[in-house]
Length: 204
Image: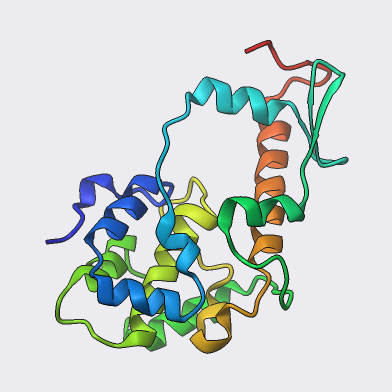
């Protein structure tokens, strides 16, 4: 049984959770084998959107700090990310390559156009799909799009899909650095587009 389409915007941790619940223990063992067992422990927690916006507006992306009331400072760094993800805080640096990532997926799954995220979810849950490399690639496409590198786009995340070309080497990349940079870039875009110059965040 698939995780229905009604839950599946790309910016959807709920879909990621549904996939985790629907995966067999054998499929999860494959993910652990490739070094990404911590992602299997993800649990969705609801946080009020107003509180999230408040925290984001308190972030100074230049100094990489959360500054509350000009006196309470919480530093943000790449070293903080492993405590959340459980992944290693080291590895090779990676760069974005959308075209190569797109071409890799199209070739790997014999497609002519990029599929919806449910394409990969259905393959993960299907009892007819047994390739270990394919299992890992499908899982990571979903994890990248719904959790690690979320966006407001309705397309799957393609910026770092080239990291999946050789699954045995994927865990050797510094995902914590990528996630940290992605978060700060997203916050910066939000601040630039949504905050009035000189305005301080309202008290939550």
